[in-house]
Image 1 (cartoon, rainbow over the protein chains, first blue to last red):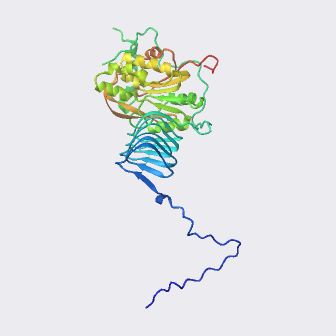
Image 2: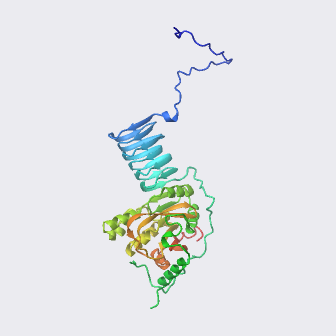
Image 3: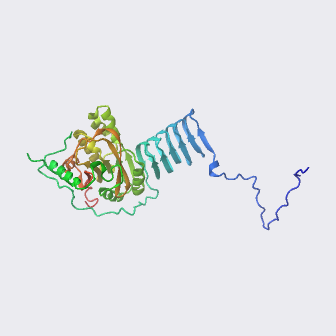
Length: 179
Length: 228
């Protein structure tokens, strides 16, 4: 009956006047939307000792000892992951355990199941209630100009102390445990 | 027998609180509920904001809101050393007497390298020896002109457990209770505080309706560095 003839093509659109023909789009890979960005996983049973670096977003569920470097990408440390490493990434999401220093150029996000023992350096740090953290957090701004909030201003210090309850010189020391 | 100065003061507070209908110790503003105003915090912040990238030492459990607040407000380096966790652990293990021996290792940053200390109400949970040892260590760690913010209960309490101090903004703090087996041990007067932090000066002291004294102490600046 009716069978499509592959040789019959729809008429080509009229050629647009111009010096350059339109480039063939077939040869150029199209940028993928964010949802389809390749996501690499390191599974629960994987143990890596050494240096791990790359240029893709990465989720780790296993164990890594050494160094992790994803300077342009997001590193997700899954709930089962145990990391003993120095971590450098664009952004780090911590749901598992990290022992070591974490540096991110954008953000470090420690979720409620996350634990970090080490120093964090990042312009933004979010820590959920229930998360464990021990160490230092360096959020020094790039550029150095201090941001002053609208409500806080530099005040002239007062010359004299102003205790709400005046101290009584005659009173004996009372700093004893009370039952 | 005449009451001591502290007893008189405590009685005054009882009467003051009793005059506020429906306001009990645990229902005071900011105690596990709505944020309560803080007068010392804005002064602490203004002092810290005059320093480039100040170093703050927080002796409480990590609180995400506080990290974001102090980081964004001051661009600071925040050292988190949850000594409440140590207090609780040593209490459970029935060896709290070793607390003071652990301080040097626990607070191991260089002397004079800390610009501000947030010790919240930690001192209420210590005994005298531990409180003195911790105060001496903090005085050593503070840089000249550095400040310490603390909260001290003015009446004894039998309630066990601790509370997180969550900074809501530059003028308000919310208290979020969380579990623990230790109750408050010390009731310190202004004079006790001054003696304990020998080397610091009480610059502000505010008595709050929640029977808490909000105290700001400052280490004298180096001569000629800035106005006192």
